[in-house]
Length: 122
Image 1 (spheres, helix red, strand yellow):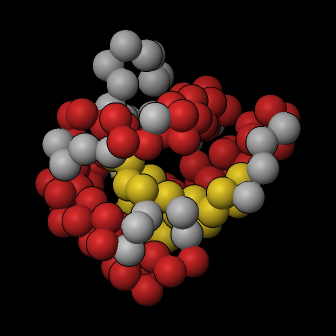
Image 2: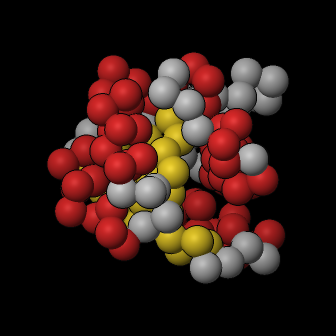
C-alpha cells in the first residue's frame, strides 16, 4: 500500500481533497492510503509516508519541501490547481499513477516540471 500525505497551508483544503481521493481510489480498486496535513506537518510525517502531494498554492515553498522529502527518500509532487471533487481527485490520481510509473522523470526540483500540462485538471 502506498502511503500519501496531501498538504495545503492549514490542512483544510487537503482534508476535502483526501475525502474524494479515498472515494475515487476505492472505485478504481487502488491500494492507496491518504492522509491530510498542513505545511507544518511535513517534517514530522515523512517517516510514515511514501509520497507527499503539495497544494498548488504552496508552489513558492515547493523547492524546500522537495529537498526535505528527497532527503527522507519520499517522492514529492506539486499538484496543479484541482477542484475538491471527484474530477479533481481523478486528476490527482492520474498524476500519482504517472509518478509511480516514472519516479525519476516525474520528480524534479522545478515545480512546473511536476505538473502535467497535457491534462485538463478542472
